[in-house]
Amino acid sequence: MANDTADAPPPVGLKANAIGFVDALVIGLNSTSPAYSLAAVIGPIVALVGIYAPGVMVASFVPMLLIASAFYYLNKVDQDCGTTFSWVTRAMGPWAGWLGGWAIAMTGVLVVGSLADVAVSFALLAFGLDSWADNDFVRQSLAVLLILVMTAVCVVGTEVSAKVQNVLILAQVACLIAFVVVALYRVYAGTSSFDSIDPAFKWLNPFGAGGASLTGALLLGVFIYWGWESAVNLTEEVENSATAPGKAGVWSTVVLLVTYLSVGFAVVAYAGTTFLAENADEEEFVFALLATEVMGGWDWVVLLAVSTSALASTQTTIIPASRTALSMARRHALPEHFAHIHPRFRTPDVSTWWVAGIAIAWYLVVNQISTNALFDSLTALSLLIAFYYALTGVACAVYYRRHLTESVRYFVLIGLGPLVGAGLLAWLLVESVSDMADPENSYSGVSWFGLGPPLVIGIGIALIGVVLMVVRRLMSPVFWSERPGVADADLVHGKES
Image (cartoon, rainbow, N blue to C red):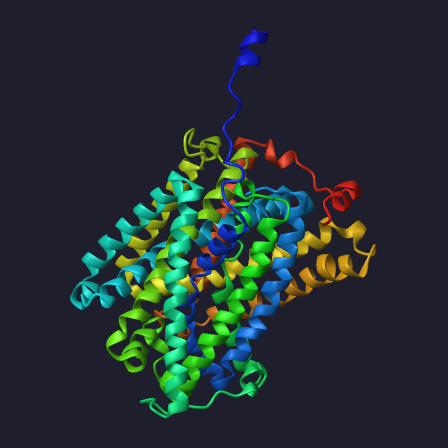
């Protein structure tokens, strides 16, 4: 029997050193879907704050950078693909950790279908197939097919995923740069077909439009940065896993800021505030309207940018949800079959397909209610995002609490910064709940149980999570026997670069 144990093959884990820093950075960038995110929020932000939209993008960047610092330092002491789930469990216990993991998993479920829908719609528009884009059956069928293809790419291997993402980010960035250059050229040449405005540094003032408008705009601004942490979810598969994934996450937020400011200045300068405000309800299709105006016969360039952006994010958004489910299953917080790793590709195949399957079901069911219901489910995302980001920031300060006074660097980057970021996100979470309580603020404009549909969806997801957590606690109490701890001094200083 001893020989049988010695000869047993080692357990299959995720493929270590599968990708490098640059690959992780690209995946982090693509997870945010820059072109799609900008297209979706630029109109509504301008409607709220006018020319100060670029300033809001800067203000929204601050809590993201502070939380990225928390991700970096927590990853240094715990390279677990479950990120928030694992770290919060270490610092604050299994109940809080489980809820953080549930929030991450559900963000993927809510958004993947919408991303695939946008990728398909803009691709069809780019190729002049407008009638196909308007046909619900065709568009939804192609979106489901796209999700299945992107899921298969995720399962085949992290290296393949990274190569696909590298191509998509190059296409996306090239298209966005072309749009920015042409738009600004036409502004200064005086050939814009709208009431263009010369760019000015005062646009970077986020407080220019006042408090109430700023709050609403910041809620939208946080959404456009969400997703950069996908790079950290790949920590077990990235070279130099103790530092590279965290750095990729931090640098992703910085690169996104530069990208958003460039496009934000170009769009506001070219189209002016009146056009953008009047068409705010068009969401991501504002770019489709601007494409022809700015690029003429080359409008397909902008449409392709949004399509590749959503296409890339369709794939990368599956990564954090599937890796989180894998991490939870390894520690018995979820059924063990979610921890299965493909013996050849060494990816979490079962959890990946489950995430895709639930996302497809959600997309199809909610679409049967109405397109506005799908948009309402995306609005509910802000609740989950703010929750697990804030939870991570608090966990960082709690886990490192005995080391915060060792240096100014520790106090600011591991304690104060993450707590300030968490506080800002908690404030936005409260504001979101207050805003979503009013049915008039939803896309559907109808009342569900006396509340707005996005808030009902958010509360429903939270309640389902609590029920499942209690059921799992009763069925398999192993995970709930874990106790919170504190960062060990040798571990902290030994891994400090």
